[in-house]
Length: 434
Image (cartoon, rainbow, N blue to C red):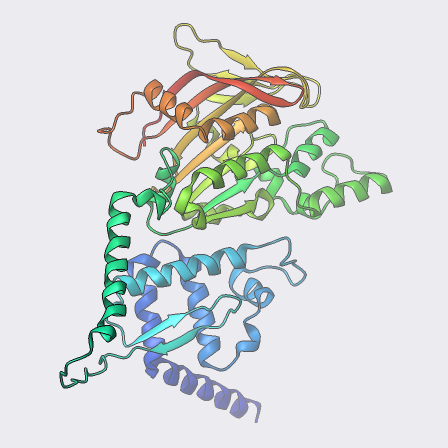
């Protein structure tokens, strides 16, 4: 009897599967996920198929942010959607990919699929293939006063168009300038700004030892367990749990994000702000990124450290000065560039601005890292100034005829006064081969 019930259940599943495959809306989903714009990310394809399948089966109760996180992203039962925004980020990317598809390969489709904002259900909308027929109206003479409003409207429209051509900058915002423009050159995908994890930096100081990206991603760190002491006190356990569970960043990172928003013009809508805590290695396979902070505050910079000539170094954590190691000094350059003893003091600090290709070649990464917060803040301020960007281009030998994308790293020096960066200058530059 049990075997009969199992076979009957399998038969119903096969019947539902065949019914789904015969649905023209599901056939549209199959074409979309097989298109070129969806080939870069398996996770986006899985997300669309799951949302469409649940919608077509009438199981929209499964389409919550938490439910999608568990079903598609493999999140644990107790994960927090407040602290982990990966579902929202990927749904945002999915909306952009769908627009890209229907503006290109899918222009002739008879259905359009959308993910309305504030919803995780797929909306299928039939496209009217036949425009409404034009109704001919017999011509008849009109009094002159009936023509005047239309004449004035046409005059206003022509004047507006003329002003747009003469002063386009007064109507539309400019695009992001170089080098930020390189990040937005990869189609319509969002650019993710990953700010530092201040708790990670504090954990290093409490542990009095350097941490790595592997340690940062380890379950023991994520669960709030003490990393070095096998018998922590109750107070230490509470502190470690708070540091591993909360999302905090620095004032310097806020300043950098503000400057990016100020200078990106009409591309600002494509910026997504994320915490280093939310990122996963698989996320780096797709899109462009801005990493704010050095490896001691944003461990994801470790992922690209071996591509850089100027690398952050530190002796005893919390006791020694951090410095940039110049791996291959050129004539007139130093081997080491030490920064401030601690954030909030006065003196010289250093930062690097680096533009790199992502490993798979489908995006770019901009890294703004300072030895202390003053250096990181100075890097963001430097890029927001048109004169500084011109100086950087000249130092790198970039002209209007230089092929893009153009990858580089630049070491800059800033004079900090009581925690505020000032008087920033370029110290050295390097070209990076793709």
